[in-house]
Image (cartoon, helix red, strand yellow):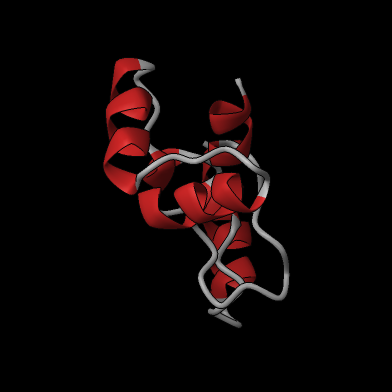
Length: 81
């Protein structure tokens, strides 16, 4: 299903917001010729048990220049535990 593929994909580097919203998914699908509302996107994702806020979100923090340093620290703790 195209909706799930969009919801689980990474957004473009040029996008201001890193994570998908129901509205941005609906707009993307509409641009691809699939007319759907953001509320319908939400209902379908809920039925599929997909949460757009939990899809690769912690890896997509382009807006925080110190993020990758913190990732190394946290992952290092887990690897050395």
